[in-house]
Structures are given as C-alpha cells and as structure tokens.
Image (cartoon, rainbow, N blue to C red; front, side, top):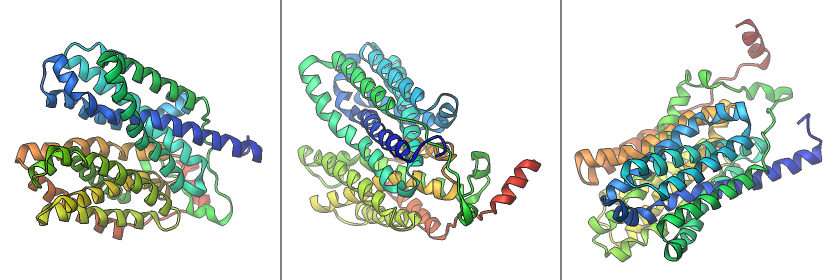
Length: 408
C-alpha cells in the first residue's frame, strides 16, 4: 500500500471492483450460446450436436487461457490484458458471423472466444480478490455473480437482437457490446499491490509459487475436489432438459423450465456460499456444498423422480456448483497465499475444461445417464472425504523462507 495514500487506496480498489463487475458481466455473455445452435445448424447445414461442439471448445479454451493469464498479467498488467481480451472476443464474434463451415465456427466461436473469455475471467477475478484480502468471499461472490448474471442479461439482449436483425448482425452487435463493456471496465482497474504481512501473522502468510504448490499433496487434493464439482455441475446442467424428458417423462415445455431453476440456484449458491465463506472456514463451506450436491445426485440416482424432486435435484447440483467456483479462488489463496493466486488457481482451473467434456465423454462411451451419475457420485464421496481431512500446508517462519531463497 506504500504507493497509495489511505484515501486513494480505498478509491482505487472500489473502482477496480466496479470495473471487474462490468467486465465479468460482459464475459459471462458466452453462456447464452445455446440460443444460436438451431439457426447456426440451419445456416451451416450441420447437426445441432456438431454446432454445439463449438461450446465445448469454448469451455476448453476458457480453461487453458485462465491457466496462462497470470503470466500475461505479470508482463502486461491487468488493464492491457483485459482490453486485449475484449478486442479478441469482438473479433471472434465477427468471424463467427461470417463463418461458412464448421471448422471456421470452431476456430472463431470455439477457440478465439474461449481464449478471450478465459484471459479476462480468472485474471480480473483474482486481481480484484487481492485488493480485498479482508473480505475475499464477498468479493468473489460479487465478481462471479456478475459473470452469472451476464448470461441471464445477454439471454434477453441476444434473443431480442435475433428477432430484430438476424443471426449475423446479432453476433457483430454482441461482440461490439461485450468489447465496449470490457474495455470500459478495464479502464477502471489497477493491478493489486503485493500483499505483505507484518508482525506475528507473517508466519501464517507464506506465498507459494506455482512450482512449490504443485509439490504439495494439498494442491492435488484441491484439484480433485474442483474437477469433481465442475464435472457434476457442468454435466447435469448441460443435459438437464434431456433428463427431464428421458427419466422423468416431463413434457418438453415443462423440462425447459430447468433452465430457470438452474439459473436461480446457481446464482443463489454463488451469493450464499460466497458470503458464508467469510464467516467460517472456507474448506467447511466446500464440504457443505459437496453434501448438497450429493443430495441432488442421490435423488437423480436412487429415487423415482416426479416434477418436484427433479427440480430439487437440479437446484442442489447447481447451487453447489455455483458456490464451489465462487469460494475456490479464496480457498486457494488460504492454502497458497494471495500473491501467486492467478497462477496457482489458473492451473487448477483446467479442471473446469476437463470437467466440461469428461461427463459427456463417459456418457457417450457407456451410454445413458446412470453410469455417469454413478461415477459423479463416487467422485463426490471421495472429494467430501478429502475436504474433511485436508489441512493447510505447514508454514515456515518468514525468516527461514528468506534464508532459504537467498541461499538457493
């Protein structure tokens, strides 16, 4: 904080929060993608499943770019990287509007938009959390909640544009609008200062580099928990309508209400568990989220569902997923320190991309929902046990750290 006065420090970090929320809202717009599958399939003379594969590539690109965002921020700073992400996203949507075959669609809407989204998402989130070390959970909830609200807000914007101006113009306007919001938000951001501990607490605030973190068992225990949460949430959310029609025998219109239930539960999980994580041990919040998810999966696997229990099961899984991805950045900083959060969480975030395809891959290989649900249930039980036994890494006194690093 030495380069800021007390008043300018407060002003800068609150401006950074506002800028991050605006940017996250625009980045979250990519989750409206299912609105376009039908019209793109007609335009490209392809099946809906072939077109929908572009969103799988987008999720993978998002996870990969998130894992590299820390290096980009170190070199260029949060503002420049966010602006670059906004420009790349607009370019990706412009190319999507003009895509004439599936390969161009995969390159533009999948890889380019995914990389742009990932470069902006995790970096701006982690940077914002670093500005508020005393309320990490609430700040994560604000930023990731804005990301979730972006998908809801742009659902109406893009839906209205599709009706008014058609497919190609919608992509162009969407890209320009998202770019404008991201650049506007980026101009309000500043890179968070390095966190320095003082006094006796310094013994508890060691910052682990990524190379040091990956050598600790706790890192891979957290990775297992995160992958499991992403796999369960993304798979169930992705096939919710099909579960309603296939397993519960609901009408198409009733099953489609799953989208609304999931959106409300997902946002509720982000807000409730995010706020709760500042009031109790964050790893216990993750344990709570795992129990809620297990409840939802148990309903899906072991009961004869009706409309009510079907929506309850979806709400449990979506609530847990939303809460877990909100709490995890702060949880990682509890274990490995704030200063290297973007890198340490970035590698873990690859679990989001892997989880996004793993559930669908298992379902396609073994057929049906039951095998996939059983695997997810098993992984959830293992993850719950891990969350109950994991402990913070042993902290070395600060003087020893300095001596070790000066001698190495």
